[in-house]
Length: 462
Image 1: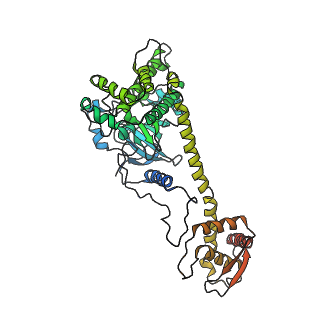
Image 2: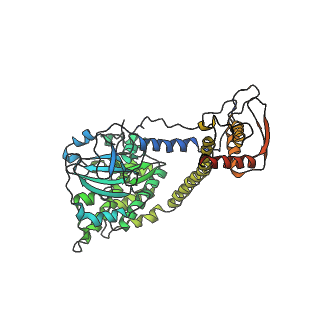
Image 3: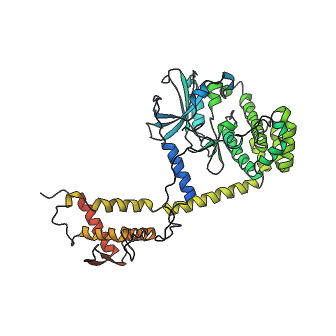
């Protein structure tokens, strides 16, 4: 099972991801509000599973990257005719770990592509400085012969669980577009989502243009969709590295402007395809039908924006010119982002104390049932360790009136928190056979707890 385009195929990989608490039984108390929501937890665990998924592979290590995993069907891509390749070179993507920082990256390899990377050093540095939430970060590029040929490799951030815009919206695209007007209208995306995409794409293009660079690749197959409809421009800088760019030549200052103008036109074409839910909508013979679909489905603001993007103009267009057309929708977009941020902060607060409680549990298990104490005459029902053992039973081994196990997560969390703070609240600790009863405070247990843990690191007495 493999991903597609180092994001996900149209159907998710079958990885077990559910790791939350099962539904409460009649002996359990509900735990709502004590941990992350199942939806967010499942999504994060899924991303982690995708990141750590390992399949047997005979791929070599390249440069400082190892454990390469193919994320595309390599054989199918390499066998395509040369004219079918997006970058004019056959390319395939891998997931790999870096021996330098241990992080996961996406490596896009271009087969039989000889590039003099030293000539593009300044260009790569400029792309590396662009950090934007709607752009996959460019990290590195190098030449390698580890694949048995001369391959050019570009390194980007890895976006686990992502799919391409093409997979999300054009997977069921039909070639007979001109005869599917009614079906197309029923499958068009909501205008609010379309504006959401427009805002994110224009923000990414604006950041690139502000750095005096151009995208040169606004293609649905090279735009990632992650999370809640978050877009990322992918494969940025590749066209500059593969095709070259004379923008550093003072004698040709118009090349960059020409490429940036083309970015704006390509953005308009992409919006038309999204609005009509078909990649063939921008073809010349389909434009009348496309215009009819857009006019009957979307507001006049969408039509005005597309006219600005696609119509020829004597004066150069700027991406910032779209801001008045977006208008108050930008406020809606910001409000949605703030709401998502509030949800994330709320979920984070639920998990905030988990690290502290985990350390407590580690110490608790490090103290109790150590094999070197089995024959220790000091281990008896009057030592500090025995109090901690009874406290462990008080937390985890509670039973009901018929001696059935009582699993009470709120009780466990409450006791651990009181232990950590050294509460003066009194509790009654009882031995399993109820022959010993100790009344003490959480502070007393904490003092014994700290003392016993410190003794672990003391040298053994001679």
